[in-house]
View: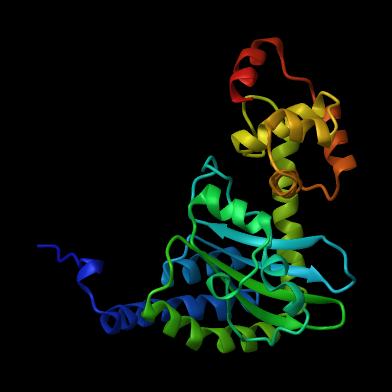
Length: 283
């Protein structure tokens, strides 16, 4: 006979115990990955499932004031989920003026801050998410590393207690990681994704970059020579929504700006005649 536990029947103390037991393996995996013995994304998956999150990312933000960021993400949703999988960092949007001063190991909640940027609001609305927790991991002269955890519901007591316990541990161990771990992970995943996306045209019906329907529409319009203003007007979307789609397109196609994206879309083999009907339906 298999015993199944009904999560709704558990008290917060029971849930905390179960989560703590589950997090032992996650922390072990985290420490192993920080010394190059295990993939970083696998560690993010275990952390995410341990705290019942929908998506987790470690994001490196430049201290130079540049808007670019480099994320390593895990997302439990399928590739074609409405709103797209997590491919961007939102810590700068969430923390705003507090971004540079956030103490490593501290906790920042979307629900506890008054102002939330439109790009984060749009992503959460599309994915039906309710909470974002940001844990600053490390700050130095060149960059800031943030752990971002997205949740489908507001946090229960046991989740908050667990995160309060985990935050300083994650920050402290992150600072002692193997040199170059994050950069190597980003470059390796970029090469894997680039290899996958260059095998077939980005806008073919194979959809090698796993674009969402909205991202595919934007890419298709850009490939036809439409300006960003034209795309925004045609789709009747806000500036912040377009920025989110572009950010996801950059991440999925492994380019860093609009010029590189348009070049990639235009220079790739054109959509074949037998694909045009399917492409129109996707658009």
